[in-house]
Picture 1 (tube, rainbow, N blue to C red):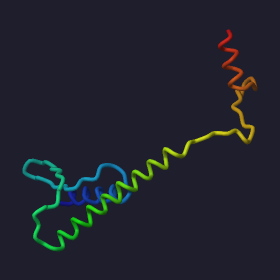
Picture 2 (picture 1 turned 45 degrees about the horizontal axis):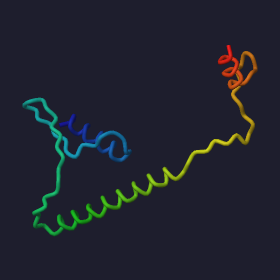
Picture 3 (picture 1 turned 90 degrees about the vertical axis):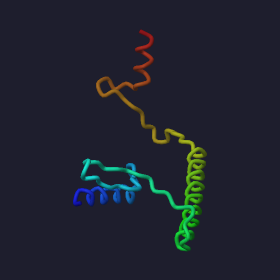
Length: 110
C-alpha cells in the first residue's frame, strides 16, 4: 500500500505542477503485480443532484479552459518576435577579431 500511496502523491504533484501525464485512476493488483490505469467518466444516468450539478459545472469549466487556450494561441500568433539591434552588439571571432558575417563571406569566396 505504501508504494501505491507514493504513486498517488507523485500523480498529485504532476497535477499541481502541470507536468507529465496525470492518471485519472491508479490501482495495484498484487495478484498479478500489475498497475492498472483507467480513465473514469461521469455517469450520465446519475440520480444524485450533487452529481448532476458537478457534471454541469465540469462542462462549463472545460468550455472555459478551451476558450482560454484558443485566446492564448491567438495572442501568441499575433505577437511576432522582432530582433532589432539597438545596442550595436555583434558576434566577433575571439582569435582574429573579425565579425562572423565577414568570416562567412570570406569562406564562401575561397
